[in-house]
Image 1 (cartoon, rainbow, N blue to C red):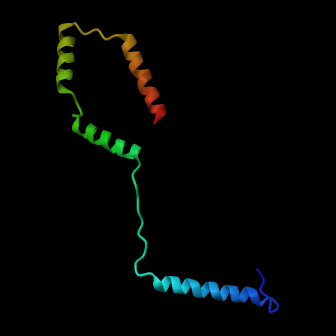
Image 2: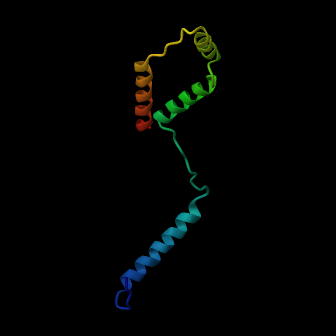
Length: 96
C-alpha cells in the first residue's frame, strides 16, 4: 500500500491500531498456553495399545502344542485357513 501525504486517514488509522496493540499487550499479565486434546478415537487407541503391551510376545503353550503335534505326525494345517489368514492380514495392512 502506498501512503501519500494527501491521505492522513491511513496514517491515523495505523497509529491508533498500533496504540491499541501496545495497550493490549501491556494489559495482559499471563500469556496463553498451548493445549492439546486427545480425541475419543485416540483414547481408544491408547487403551488398545496398553492391552497389547500386557500380552506376551510368544504364546508358549501354543508353540509347545504345535511342536508336539508335529513330532507325533498329527499336525495337518488347513490350506484354506492359512490363505484366509494371509488375506485377512493383507486387508488389515491396507486399512492402516
